[in-house]
Amino acid sequence: MNDKKYFYIMIFSLVLLLVLGVSYAWFNAVIKGNDTAKEQKVVTGNLELAFTDDTEVTLPNAVPGDSYTKTISVKNTGTLDASYSLVWQELTNEITNDELVIEATCKRLNSSNTEEGTCESISQTPIKSNTIKKNISIEPSVTHEYTIKVTFIDTGSLQDYNKKKSFSGKLGIEEYKAPDFATDSWATIIANVKAGNGSDYEVGSTKEVNLGTTYGTHTLRVANTSTPSECNTEGFSQSACGFVLEFADIITTHKMNDTETNVGGWPATSMRTFVNNDIYNVIPSEIKNSIIDTTVVSGHESTSEEENFTSTDKLYLLAPKEIYTDFNEVNDTAKDLTRTLDYYTSIGVTESNYSGAIKKNGTSASDWWLRTPTKFKFFGCFYVIQNDGNYFTDSLSNYNFGVSPAFRIG
Picture 1 (cartoon, rainbow, N blue to C red):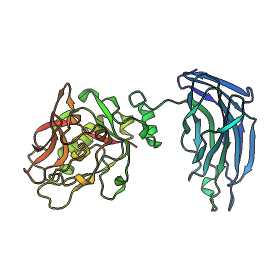
Picture 2 (cartoon, helix red, strand yellow; picture 1 turned 180 degrees about the horizontal axis):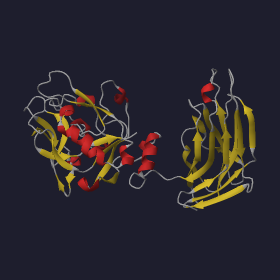
Picture 3 (cartoon, helix red, strand yellow; picture 1 turned 45 degrees about the horizontal axis):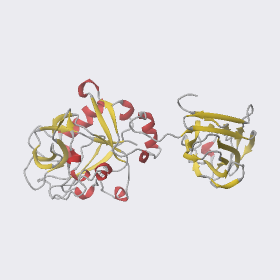
Picture 4 (tube, helix red, strand yellow; picture 1 turned 135 degrees about the vertical axis):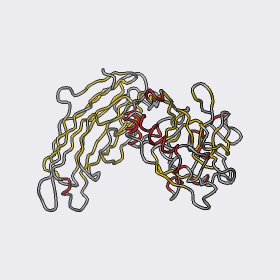
């Protein structure tokens, strides 16, 4: 058995051909069963299952609104509880507007093959993700019998935009493996996040990333996976919303500005240019290509009377409120326009309990920059996190302190 731990339940093939017409379209469906073996077995890891499916089903000249069904069963023939995922082993779906959907009911059969309640059903969902249902638990000697239904939705309007499109897929299962940020490939992590499963990764988990010969190897940390309601408020910073990765250590040192000024705040700094060019460009391409634009709101300095600053960034520095759960310092005028990252909330970082904000440059704890300018004190200053984890408001912008940015993928 290969490392992917796939076992094919059946081959599920559908060819959709929409031909010229004014008000309707049609397609042919073929659902292939196990022609050579009505029951097949797979043993891998803790997974010991037997699959059975029925004969081939064909549905020629189907029109929108038609559906077809297929029955398969999964039996745990081992002695331990197991978990599996029902997946599309291969998937090509050109049908637009989510008009091809899958759903299923499931009966639970006991060791005597007698129905004994239900198992996890599959709510109607568009066929666009390789994972149909994940982490399905099954006890020894129990059978899950699925009735799978695929429907080409009739919208009640012309569907000519799906003419000559096609769908094909192979249903299968894989042993369920809980997502692990440290060991999953970047391709897997990114796919999970884009599929809306970023919350499966544990907040605070870390993974090394190589930034090349200039900056070397550093550590990325899952800083946030949630998107609470305030994230959808107009004018709210997106820098602590969604799937956020931050560097858990200090990449290098750099000045916030080449001269002693905080005029223009974060958007006007040479630091912003540095992290969105020099640092961004050395991030491995598979990660870099998944980094999304982030609306970043930051406080204003002493020359700006009313307006905070808003920028759109790939990489950005953190703000104090994103670290300290109880932060309420008057020098940050944007403190109410962002939230504390899930990671710092989970470890309880506050203005009096701040060791969780310590970051190291190599082996030594060191000061690192935040994006927030000081409003009511000294001209030319920004916030920094000191080497003990406490913040300091009066660091002159032309000093060299640590660079430890964050970014979002999606």
